[in-house]
Image (cartoon, rainbow, N blue to C red; front, top):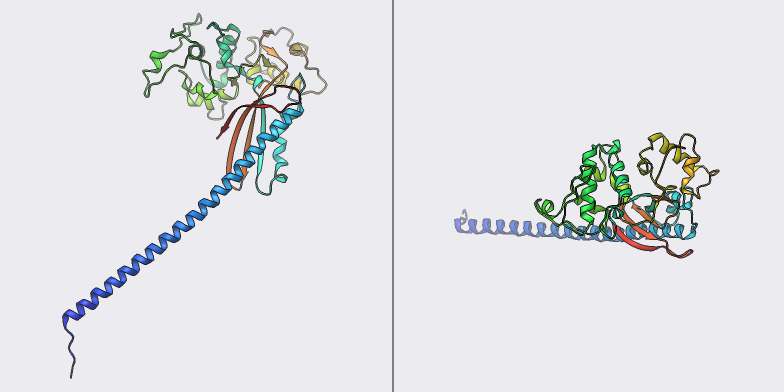
Length: 334
C-alpha cells in the first residue's frame, strides 16, 4: 500500500529547511564578521604599537641633533661644523635601534631671512630687510615680476604691523589689511602681529601653495625664511638663494664662489666681510648690519622609518648657555 504524505507536511519540512539554511547563513556571516573584526583589531593593535615605536625613533633623532649642537658651542658657526653633517647619522642610526632607523638634518635658522624683522617695534618698515625680501622674491626661481614682489612684501608688512592702514610703498607695492582678508571665502582676520609659524605665510595675499612649497622642481620660499628674530643673517651658513639676495651687486656665480670659499678649511670665516677676499668680488657691497657669523637658533628635522611607515618631527631649538642642552622653541609632528 502506498503511503501518502499530506501537502501540509511537505510545506512544513520545506519551511524548516529554509529556516535552518537561513540560520546557518546568519551564523556563518556573523562568524566571518567576528573573524574580520578580530583580525582588524589585531592589525590595529600592531599598527598602534608600530606607531609608538616609530614616534620614539623620530624623537630620538631630535635628541641626537640637540646633542650634536650641545657639543659645538663656538662663537663662529659654519657649514664645516658637525651639526651641518648630521645627516651622516642616517647611515649609523640603524645600529641604535632593534628595528627601524632615523634620518637627521640640522638647519641653521640664522642663515635665513627673518621676516618678522621687516617691521620694527615702532611699526616702521626696516628698509634693509624690505629691500632684501624684494630681491629674494624677484629671483628667477620664483617667477615673480617686480610688482608682484613689491605687493607681497607690503602685504607681509601689513600682516605684522598693528594698524589697519594698507601699506603703499614708494616702489608701487600695495599691501592688504582686514578688508581684503574678510572678503575671502572663507574670511579671516589680518593678524596685525608677528608671525608665530612660517606656515602663516600661506595666508598672505599673493603667496600661493606653489610659491610657498615649490613646484615642478623649483624651490619654495618656506626653506629660506624664518620667523625667528635672529640678530643677523649668518653669511657662513646662508643658502645660496639667500646669498644671492644680500646685495643688488650679487650674481649667481658670485654666490657659488662664496659657497666654495666658506667650505674650504683653509679659509678664515671669523669676519662677515670675508667675501671681499674672493677674486672678482671686491666691488660687491653688502649692508654690514645684515650679516654676521654666529648662530643660536636651529631647526632639527628627524624622519623615523620602520618598514614602510614614516614619521617626521621638526623641532626649533635655541642654544642658550655654552655647554647646555639647547632649549626647544617649537615642536611639530608631520
